Amino acid sequence: RNFDLIAPHGFGELVSGSEREADYATLVTRMRESGENPAKYAWYLKEAREGIPASAGFGMGLQRLVRFLTGLDALWQVSAYPKLPGVIAP
Image 1 (tube, helix red, strand yellow):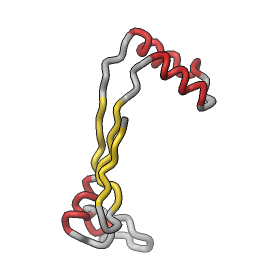
Image 2 (cartoon, rainbow, N blue to C red; image 1 turned 90 degrees about the vertical axis):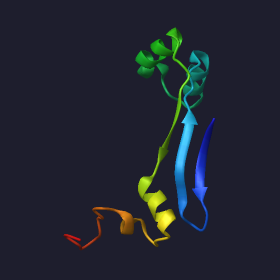
Image 3 (cartoon, rainbow, N blue to C red; image 1 turned 120 degrees about the vertical axis):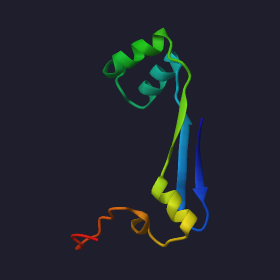
């Protein structure tokens, strides 16, 4: 399960979150379906087999949120230290 909070008018994604898969059998099945070798993740699968507590989280783009709230045209306008081509210092 996951979600995205998309701001209107072209501002884009502000927040993205998801629930971590904790079921051992599901993890192995999905790895195999995607062509991954489960042996590469032995340490993680060991933890999953012993029981990983359910968890979820999200990330927020603070600069994107500030841009949305202020209505500015570009992300660099809300950045404390924007990187602009050809500009050495703001």
